Image (cartoon, rainbow, N blue to C red):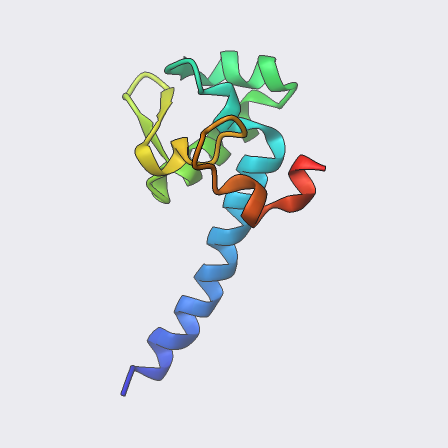
Length: 102
C-alpha cells in the first residue's frame, strides 16, 4: 500500500508539473528551440517574454527533463521536449494541448 503522504505530494506536484508543461507549450518554448540551443535572453526576446520569468520557466522545464541547460543560461531540447514541437512527426502537443493548435 502506498504511503498516503507520498500519494498526496504526488498529486500536488503532478498539478505543478502539468502547469509548467502547459505554459511551455502555450508560450512556444519548444518550437523556439527547434533549431538548436539558445540563450535565455534570445528565447525571451523571440517570444516576447520577461527574461527573468522566462529563465524561471526554462529552469522548471529543465527540472522536468524537457530541456537541458548548459551552465551559461543556454537551453536545448531533450528527446522528450522535442516531442512537444508543433512540427515533430510524432508530436504529443496536439493530443495533450489541443487549445494550443486550434
